[in-house]
Image (cartoon, rainbow, N blue to C red; front, top):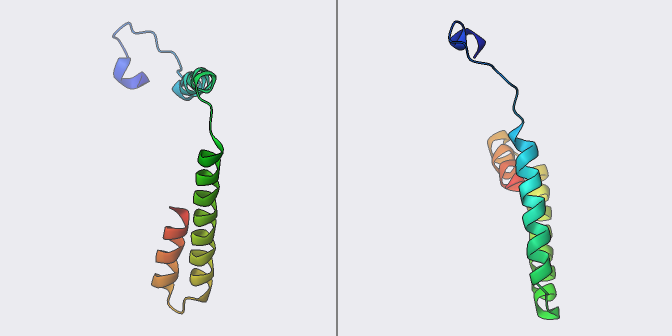
Length: 82
C-alpha cells in the first residue's frame, strides 16, 4: 500500500476492523438479550442439539483414529472440524 500511495499525498493509517466488529456484535447481543426470554422448551432443544453435535464429533474423531487410509483419515478429520 505504501508503494501504491507514494506521491499521491495520501495519509496511511492502520485500521483494525475486527475490533469494531466485536464491539458491534457485543452491543447487538446485549440489546437482543434485553428482549429475549428463553423458555424451558428452548433450553431443552438447545441441550439436545449440543448433545447431538457432541456425539457426532466423538464419532468422527473415533472414525478418524481407526481409519486405515490416510485419505480417509484426512477426510474424517475435516468433517470433525466442520
